[in-house]
Image (tube, rainbow, N blue to C red; front, side, top):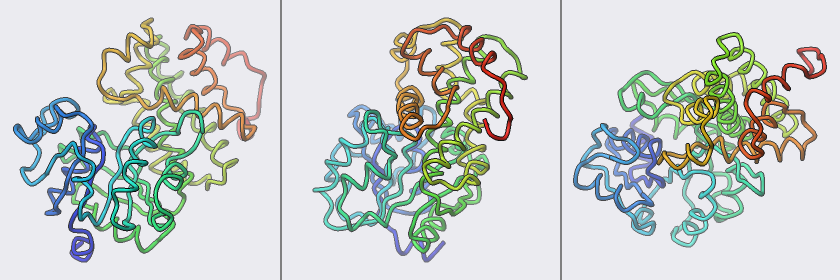
Length: 342
């Protein structure tokens, strides 16, 4: 830990949602000098004067050493490490602003879980298209079952950090580890990113199941078959299938499909109870990544010729007005299949 801290003393965390704020807090608590960039001026003011992110992480005390700012230039000045936690739909726009502000290449840890709409690109591809080539190998991706509120309460949490540069990943792993936040290392960038993104779509579906009152059998079937869809797409895209049985796959999938703190599950729950999507989204500040990711996931499925019936039906509910009851009925009467190949 000491070597890692000496290597990275000054960190910029870009994105002050619940997860970005939590990671900034975790790093500041280890003694690092952390600047946290927020898009919302009220978030910066609340952190500066109340030492609390009252909009996205209410009730969590933040260390006085954590420096909030609304200026990207100020956030990035003299930094040695960049932690990126901006929602996927805004990632490209923010990254384009970041590139010209960097004085040179620095490592970047992405904590964004999503797939870009329209391009169907993973965050690694978006980052590589927008940041200097000198940073392309210095990327790492953080994922796994990690509700921000529970991390802030010091409840034991395990995540995975994947990157091409094994030595860099080891240094970052040591930097992030605490007695309650355990980080495992990996190299499967595609699998870790897909797991973190696709589980949000499955969480929407799980919420719908519970909103309809269909019971534990149905939810268990949904989670299991959802995992099968994730593995199929990941394998087609070159990921290691074993990744999906780890923290960024089944770990995050179980958490977000069963935990009431999951934003995506909550959106699905309300859809299952008959609420309209626009009504639901209007009433929440936090981003439910699965809503946007579902359309991108379906685009990837079509591009790679992969069957993803759950993802397809989630899109039908979200964007085509199909009733959740009809979705369940249609999924159940699909042609008979062998489990291990379909």
